[in-house]
Length: 204
Ligand code: GTP
Ligand code: MG
Image 1: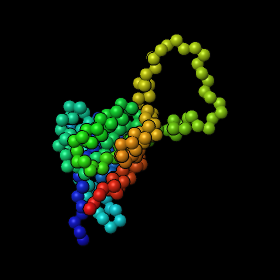
Image 2: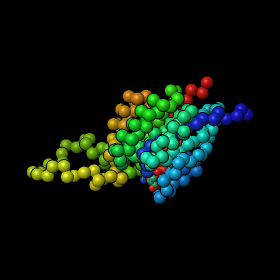
Image 3: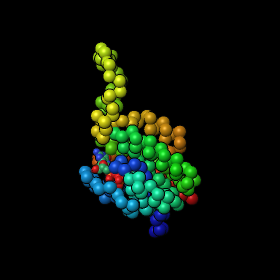
Image 4: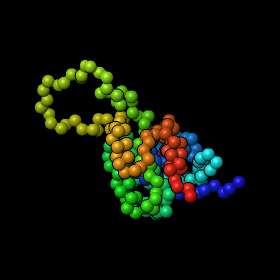
């Protein structure tokens, strides 16, 4: 049998969005509630089968903490694919993902396949997604409100969806990226992320 084709994949994204958790789910089919932050980077491998082709993914899981930012080019240099992760419950993490994508488009291999992945999909309830559809009775409006901007996002931060699927998808499509939502916790979308990347790679 032919030697598997080796592909270098890098994961990038803000701290705590779940990069290591996605990789751990993909490689070992495991999930840890209290995963410790990555220091530097971690290296793991996993195979993906596409019809008759087997790809061996060499996966570099980078550290999201800003103090490690200067190391990132070592890991995305020569990478054929990148998974840029944000957390659907933290809108700042989508901004950070966009800046990673800009950096990749300026500095990485010009043919790099990039997937934008919204993680922690298990924290999005359907009622959040559909709250404005199909209802004839609008929610009651407050009669009077004197306070200005006192309600900040801190309320819901880290607990419910802050990034609408359509917002991220529209951005991803405009930039020519793959787009998926996933949950390292449940496994939803995880194998699909790496399979979609494999399909989009130009293997010839
Ligand atoms: P750095 O290594 O610091 O860059 O973080 P990271 O992006 O690798 O995040 P990590 O995988 O360490 O996950 C951070 C926290 O989020 C951990 O407590 C995980 O258990 C949790 N987490 C990761 N993925 C998910 C998910 O899909 N759903 C939920 N509910 N929690 C998740
Ligand atoms: Mg990590």
